[in-house]
Image (cartoon, rainbow, N blue to C red; front, top):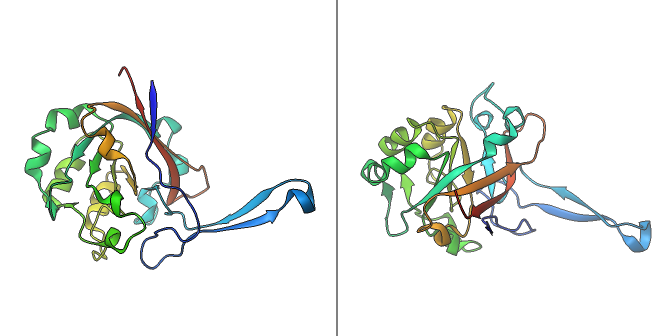
Length: 214
C-alpha cells in the first residue's frame, strides 16, 4: 500500500483566492518562555487544499460538520484534462461515463498545480462548461476535486458550477496537487477529511490517495 499526499502546505504568503487573506501562523507559546511550544493559526475556511460545503453558497445549506465522516472517503479516479484548453465539455465525461458511475469522487488533473505560487495560477485554467457540470452532477457522487483554485473561472462571480454541485449536496475539493501521478492509476481510495468545526461552510483538508488493491 502506498499513500500519496495531494495537499499543499499551509504557510504565510501562500496563494489564496483573490480578495481573501493568506494565513497567519503566530508563535503563541515557546519552550524557552512557557515550557511548551504552541502556535496560533488564523486563516479563512477556504485556505489551501480545502473543501466547499453547500453552506458556502446557500443559506441553510448543509455544513461539513453534519456529514458523516465516511462521506469524506471513497473510491476515486482522475480525469486528465491537462491538454485541454479552456472549457471541459460533456464529451470528455461521456468517454469515461462507466468509471464515473462506479466512483465516489472524480478528480480533474488540469496541470495547474505546477503554477502554485505564481501569477499564472489564477489564469485561464480548464473548467467544466455548464452542460458538463450538470451531466457530472447527475451521478451519485460524493464530490469532485481539482488541482486548481476553483471549480469556476476566477472571474465568474456567480460561481455557476459551484451552485450546480453544491445544490446536489456534493462537496468540492480545490487546490489539490500530484494528480499527474494518478492520471494512469485507475481507481484508488481518496481521503479528504476536513476539520470538524461548527457550521463549517468549508475547511482545509489533508487530501491523500491510497494506492493498492481496490
